[in-house]
Length: 108
Image 1: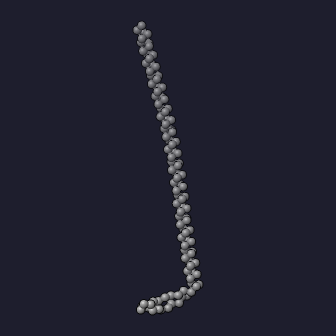
Image 2: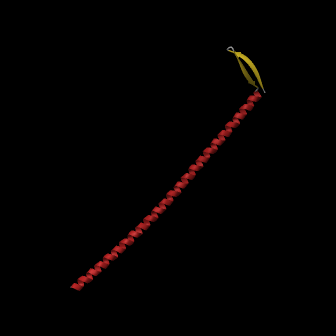
Image 3: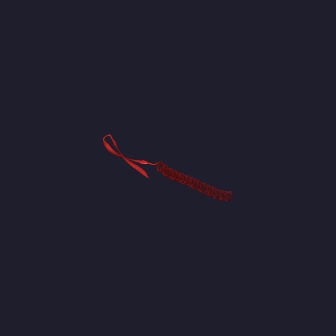
């Protein structure tokens, strides 16, 4: 309960409510609870953001690893293809040399 009093201040009437100490204590307790709830909510939001950051970092790392694996696989495939082409070209050159040798031997 509060007590209301009217005072004359600078020629104007002012209504002033006076609270009892129990009301003040209740008011402070309510404010403290609100402050704690707001702090708890902020901490939870911060923790959620941190978890999301960690999840994004893990996902990014996973993608980078997958991209690296794909890159290595492509490099191996390309290397194998180049080696096969080189061998094929080498066999063709050997076959041409053999044909040329046969032609030269035939002409001699």
